[in-house]
Image 1 (cartoon, rainbow over the protein chains, first blue to last red):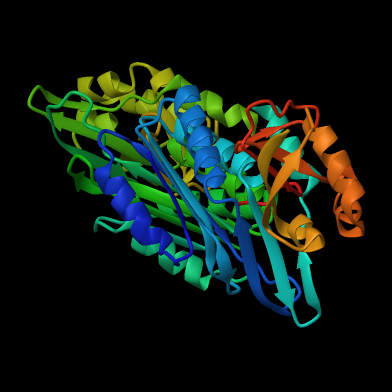
Image 2: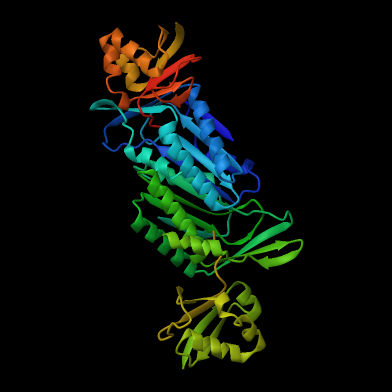
Length: 146
Length: 146
Length: 84
Length: 84
């Protein structure tokens, strides 16, 4: 289990290959990458604030719960903070398991919990000003299925 | 949409980064990698046979159906054939979408269909002899949810 | 009389002993073609002994054993697929 | 009287005007702490005007506004999280 909270950028593919290489006996690896979208075409940057200390604890707790619920060979979570440009990667999770269903379910679970239970907040700065990204009801609702 | 059927090995991470780079406006990228497992510890190689012509058609049909069902920015499918060593990658799919649910669902759908509707057959060669991998009822059952 | 390319994959190919052959047949359906093949030699009878363990594609599309052969150029027999 | 580090994040931090402060309080629960803060200055009243829009963590664990403060060293207020 590897959890990283960092301001530096990273290459999801490089991380995926390194993760896969160190996992033994897994037949299935699932990855999710979250990317800064520029829906308005006016986004200058996205700034991610987090709660140092609690962030790591929350991510570890979520990852540990995934490992309890599913049969996983390994879990990787990387989440950035600070200013990010459009199209930069915000975060990724990767899961490895013997069978594909465990890896898929665990990755979705990690994402659903990470969205609304890990202390990150996004602010968008655009030509039109700046605003905090509002939490979506659909993200809260997504938790009810687990 | 990119579909590749090849005997050459590939690096899932490299493919993932290239896929992500050419997708525009997607906030979510999901990848799945299938890897040769050696459960017995005696596996020498896995040999994948396929049906040239039909394979490409089947994969294109499955990918096109995923694009109809979900809002996807792009889809990648790579599947190898021929002899593969333990721990080598067999195949990967990647999906990109604005929101994570589409990318996750489409990737699972692609995998479920690819497992039992694309003309690939696996043979395992081990110290104990060789045998064709049997299709699993659970893979057939997985299709009923779509 | 029609001429059809018949393809075999995986253990069906191994039992029949070849990957592909051109077949002249009077069969109107896949099932009739199977009957003809079964009558040929023991290795075909063995390959086609349990149809529930087999799948068939006509012109590279999965179909059923009662599918018609009118216009078909290529019929393939194989076990359930195990991709991914 | 207890001494607690109070942290603010995102727009709560912006409204209060600082990320962290040490607070001396008689409050027994988070809700009572919020009442004390609200009474201080307009910017606190503004930040805490709608509790349904806020989340709270005590010692880095998410909790409710009726959570007790006994033994707490750190309380954080912030809007619903938007990670991922």
